[in-house]
Image (cartoon, rainbow, N blue to C red; front, side):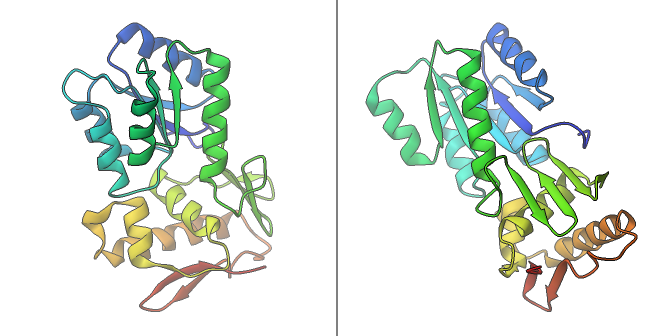
Length: 235
């Protein structure tokens, strides 16, 4: 995904006309949108892309959309926004109890959709972010809404996985994040014993940040706790 784009969104909707309309609208705000028309395709896209947000219809042709909610919640806290024609209170409660973050009943306005998407993306930034979804540590700033990392205004070109690793660390600024927690959040539970993945990605992140930081003020930004994990230095 282009690092200058906003969030990566997985849009799951079986009605092609509706899906295209929503996708076009979200792309108009620079979000990167991956489209899926059923649970199987959506699950594969989730595993491959690890998006920042999932917009999900429930009435899908192969399985109920709640199957995807269960699958995602076993591995991650990725925000899930339900868009469904099911308007019974029981349906809304069931989806929210399984781990969906918000529920919008069809028909809906695109203005409301954007407001809900923006709110979920800000919330996903964690307690380290301000009200605009920005995380600032020294000369480094992460704009969660735009999926952009800068050092003194210079863009740091991170891959999607590198960005996710840094976002998890920044969201827990000053606190130790174990290898296992990073792996589960970014790669999923199947990789919980692959600590070397984290070492490699943190090394890449450090190198890219240092290249954008000639003053060297951020060289101690990511602190290693040998054998345990990493933390963002409290500056």
